[in-house]
Structure formats: structure tokens, C-alpha cells
Length: 160
Image (cartoon, rainbow, N blue to C red):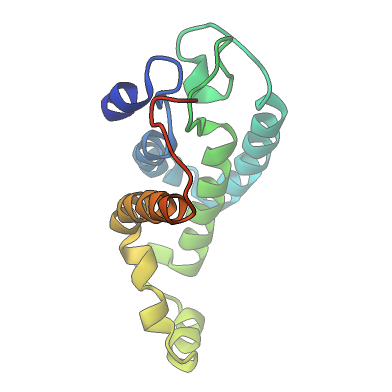
């Protein structure tokens, strides 16, 4: 947030972006796990639907930005409120609880992983998601800047 405030200014900085959302959801999931898979599925659907309904709603109440509402002056460049994004996490939690009861794989999951060629290697990006996310930003910005420079486009970072 501080870095984007310095880089983008007071209007466009990240107030509650994807990383804040992921971090908050990760803190909430252990509490939600106590509900069990059925209630997580039951609550996930309204969380998603309410979040989708509120995506254009505006409020200046402190903290409303984190839940779902946008601010009257804008939400910045990266806005991922808890509603609806907590919903898919709750569905994933429920799926994990059903597929891995007690934290252990069921035999059906073991058989699937054993039968699908390259399944273990395919899990690598999921186990390294944060470093990939952080590096891809730098790489894409660099490649975009290089492509624009090669195309003869002048880019002024201070221009909007």
C-alpha cells in the first residue's frame, strides 16, 4: 500500500488489494473451518451473490471498502473486497475438507494423482503462487516498457 501510494499518488494507490484480501481470507479460513463443509458451501453462495450485487455500491463509511463497497472518490487500482472473494475461498475450504478429511488425502485423490502424468509437477505453481505473483508484475511491466520503447512510443510515467 505504501509503495503504491508513493508510485501512484493519493488517488490511485492500493487501499485493499489482492494481497490484503488473500491475507485477510487466510486469517478467516481457520475460523470458518469450524463450520464444516456443508455450512461453508451454504454460506459461500450468498457471500458471492451479495458481493456481486454490491460491486457498484458506494459508501464513505470507514471499513466499507474492505467488505464490498467502493469509495465515492474511487477505490484505487487494485480493489478486491472480501465480498464476493471470501465465497470462492469458502468453497475451496469445503472441497479441501471433503477431499482431505482430517488433513489426509482420500484414496480417490491418491489414485487420480498417481494416474495423471505430470500431476505432481503441475502443482508447482500452486505451491509457489506468491513469488510467481510478485515476479510476474515486474516481468510484465518490463516487457511492456520494452515493447513500447521498441515501437517508438514515448511513455511519461507522470502522465495519466
